[in-house]
Figure (tube, rainbow, N blue to C red):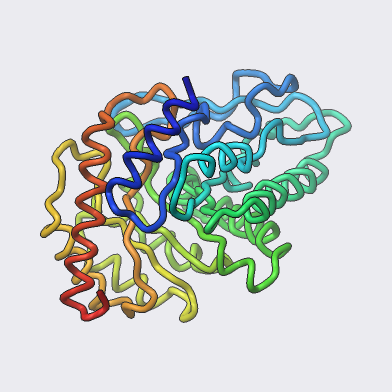
Length: 319
């Protein structure tokens, strides 16, 4: 069943004309928990994440060490590449998200310091294996960054997240980092978000301290895009690429290519075109049980993104 879903996703994605595709994480139980699916040393009563509409997601809680991944993202990449005719981007969960598995009360003789050492090693392996197996690039999903500011306005948690993720990125060469990106969004799930009400101005300056070569930034659903773009212009490192979200997966209406074009042209007023790319704000179904968006709608939106980006490229003289 999973293989059929992956094949269908790859085929439909390629039909949109996108130069780089993904498998839509079709075979993962969720974007966040795929590495720990099947691990025995877990309890169900971990951190609870509350969304704006009142629904919740709950992470498991680690009960014993040493910590290790049960599956790496490269497993899913292998399956996708069997069907793909164009380059494939691979998503991985950021180490900071999985750091939430460790309970506040500790785990006996297994210290948090030891856990974090194990986690950094495993997160490195997750990325390195995807690069080794031919991922066009690897995207670290970092939705908890914006959420951390809602839980801790002092930014101490965000600081710990940035430092932890940089501990992973630091293990790669400068050339490899060019193929590592970071995605930020307010956590879309079941047509709701967990942190859209958090001001991007509180996140973005610290986000750009991450030593990644690319940033994928939710933008289409922002109420004041020019303000966010001005923050990006001020704080983004001069040598990184910026992919701005031009499609809102939560909005059931399919954007027109012309709307996408206009959003790209707007972003080009703030970001040099040789560093500018486009993406969707978030995944269309980041958890396996999220059926809020149909496949037909998802691929219609992706097609609009591809066509709108092409229209913008012509107007910018880079087609």
